[in-house]
Length: 147
Image (cartoon, rainbow, N blue to C red; front, side):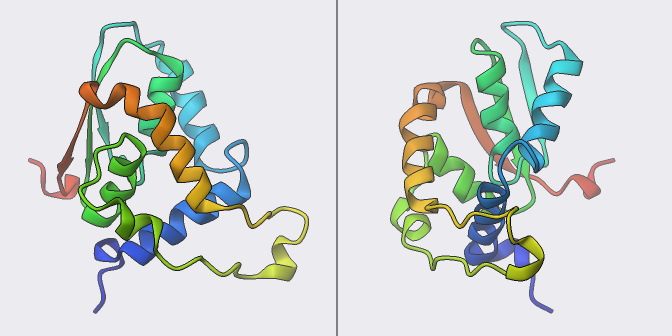
């Protein structure tokens, strides 16, 4: 059985879908509203469990500038995308040069999906979030194995 969480192409496809759908409709909105509800004070140390491609991690820094975040996820491939956003990827070309994702279910998503430029999006994310790279670190952690 293939573990999609080990596959950089799957991580890129996930990020592309979230970008295309738009942060107001997808996971970004959930992350933003959850952070607002939590009322996290400045200076807090946060564990972002299940951080994936860094959507919630970047949203944390959008909402609260003075924090420290440990982003954990079971997927090295997803974390590679997240690390890229903070200028911490050891191999950004591997992420940036990954295959473009084809739009699935074109008819179903018509009017709800715009095939946006993922490479440009990731470059802009890196430019913005690299200012926080000293206050974020990444750990591979399978949360279902915690006692």
